[in-house]
Image 1 (cartoon, each protein chain N blue to C red):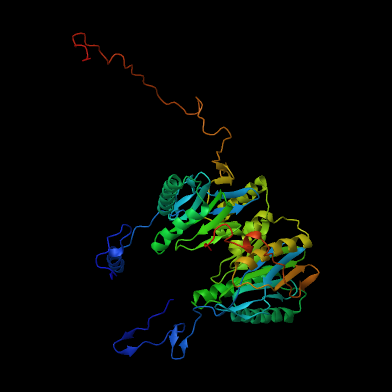
Image 2: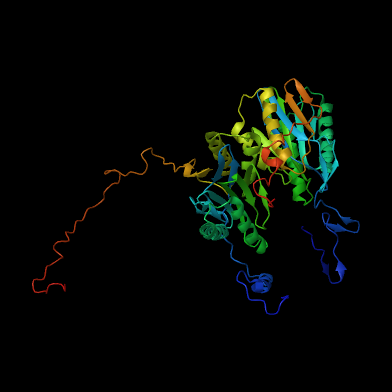
Length: 252
Length: 274
């Protein structure tokens, strides 16, 4: 945890620098996240872009909130999914609200597409990181404008890139191998949902902060659809789970 | 160090006496040398006739690949094999040691070794070293009581599972297993799934790479398929490989020195001693 030292020179206190970590009111920059959301996964499919995330907000190791919507639509052409600190996600939504509002006020027939929103988010995240006060999120930005599909990611330090399929948090380790092996250019909506659910199931089994309540959001040229929350079917019926120490009495 | 009986015989094994000195040196800034880790993907699964183990073949020393084609599936008994992740020296030493102990036990009992015997020997050894022996193992075999698959962690805890993965690539491999495993796989399906899981680790984890080793253990027969898949071949720019034909290199000058004129058979020299 970096702390800027406040030097005393000749017994006089230096004027507190604007982004000093410590002031009389306590620390003024984000050091660690408190209420966090876990992975978001997204991929392009034939007609557009599809995102999925669960609805859990963990407070450390407690599952505090179970109806957090971590995917929101931005303007007409974009979807934003976020993992990490929930309050920072809400702050980002406010920034984007203002951005879209100003864009609408121009009333010039143009509207901000996913590429522009992605670029704006990159600048915001990178500038906050440079001031040692990051927005503690990994963002997934997907959208379609004029038939062009777009899917990108921005991290909390400003790392950004575009790809055919993305994942944040634990999804990097568990979902990405599956997506790399099984994603294709021309997936239909049903196939894309099936592939996404495959990844979500693995995350549900193996990520301790995942819960069995998901939302899937899709965006096409026609518009945005964010599904109602639903659950996946898990399988626990392996015979080895019934009596694990069957052949090995006394072991566990 | 408190001793409950002043005249207890000195036992062999690791002496923790130097730990205080090591800590003091670390505080002074003297770094311990790093050890070679296997940064690995190892997997095992139970299929209808027995157990299949799989491993990648890359051994890393920090960011460098120390061994491109090492063997991570270790022999324990004719019907029991063990994959090892963690510090290479620790996995080698502990599996060799338990393998010898199992052999002696076979001589004493006159019976085939059981997987839980190997399991108990491994876990009690690792527990007594409190996690300092950094060996994470996937132990599998088929004995008189059936097929068994276990994972052993460095601190000495174990799990009994239908499918298991360990090492840095374990999440990538587990993603494949969780989405594709089902009970009662045939031998070919099992080998295919194991290879897929190891390949997932090889291509998605930086600590794993090179080739796929597979070991199939069934009642009465074990097949060790070393380098079952080689998905990372050396690629040459030319399809013929490196093959320098005459005429590829421009000859600037030639000087031939016949050696025969230098060597003179001295007639007066005696013959060599017999």
